[in-house]
Amino acid sequence: MNVIHEQYENKGAFVAQEDGKNAGEMTYSKAGDKMIIIDHTEVDPAFGGKGVGKKMVLAAVDFAREHHIKILPLCPFAKAAFDKDESIQDVL
Image 1: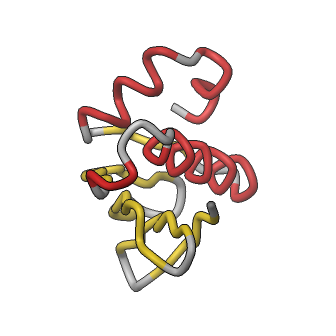
Image 2: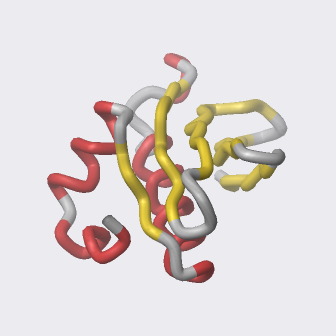
């Protein structure tokens, strides 16, 4: 499974793909130059239980670390992922 990062002017998405199909999407908005706000995570039910959401969160964390920015997880799924995993909380 690959996670592709798409960026637009003030928004972006991490899209999980497997075998040419979209397995899930996590969207965000930019809050200035130093923060992104994760606002929605959705996983195709056909890919449930495969850790798709977690893979997208980890892709966002990698992006944040690489670009020295912070993440505000407003999406309930993303917030729960950050609450459960202390190893990724450095980008909060």
